[in-house]
Image (spheres, rainbow, N blue to C red):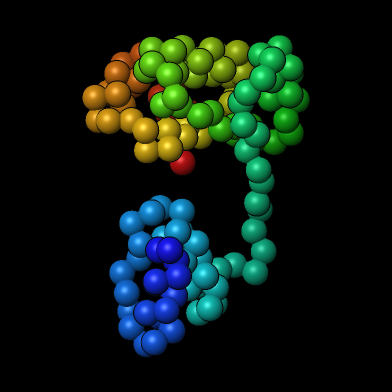
Length: 130
């Protein structure tokens, strides 16, 4: 609904603010950038594998990745201590791995602080949020 309402207002000549849903706002901003030629003609798009399933298979798959190793971890589904332990385990096992952490807006500020407390400070630079 947010996209439809925005598109109708835009079509009618208005400049409506982007919707509050991040995925909708991102999609609209990409479409706008493409319309005015702000997107590059070519880019290096790589999918980041989702860390799930059997840990032994996951570690082997991540370690064998060519080039820059980037993977995605869903956090915010469990307790902050568990999420922190999983992140520490992955980053300790694969020294050149970078993680994209996706909490799907499930964290309160307190939960985010608790998670940060459990992540090894030496590993914090290797995490980003998506």
